[in-house]
Figure 1 (cartoon, helix red, strand yellow):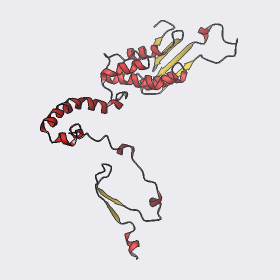
Figure 2: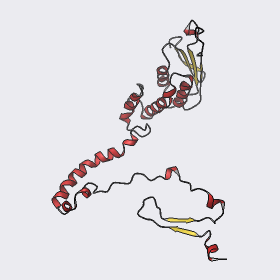
Figure 3: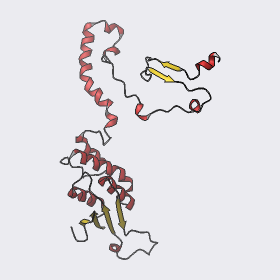
Length: 230
């Protein structure tokens, strides 16, 4: 066998370099001409490198070379470097603030106000606040429609939901004379998820237009009926 043939399929060594993306280890190189050698490289989404840490002397190192030789200047600038560290950490994390899964709890109600959701009460459990915010944000584009209400109920309850309504489309002059005949909606869910029954009903009420007659069933029980004023 030729020297080239002996190297086919041999183990290649990968050494660490100054690049943080390079990891020390070994990989097996597939033989030339095989399906494996032609396949594109696969990059795992969870293998992305996070933001590298700042150098502990990130501010001091920005001083002109002449000032670095002065102990006074170095110590003086180090004071501001330490004070600025908290601000820099906050700036590094700003991209995560709008994420409902990790944003600080006090910001949940504030984020909800961006999309005119007033039901994220700080007195509610933290996980409940996050569920309400995520559900409201995802259903925002379809708010006021059957599909939007169905999606909202699924996200709140964590299970399937069924919505029936009397809405429709009519030509000009052909719409019903009595809007109450068609302005109704009946909703069914299997449970209320992380929410208590009262919390669930309050959130659903907030999604239903005032002129629409609504009924909500949890399992076989009717827990909301605006027709009967309950």
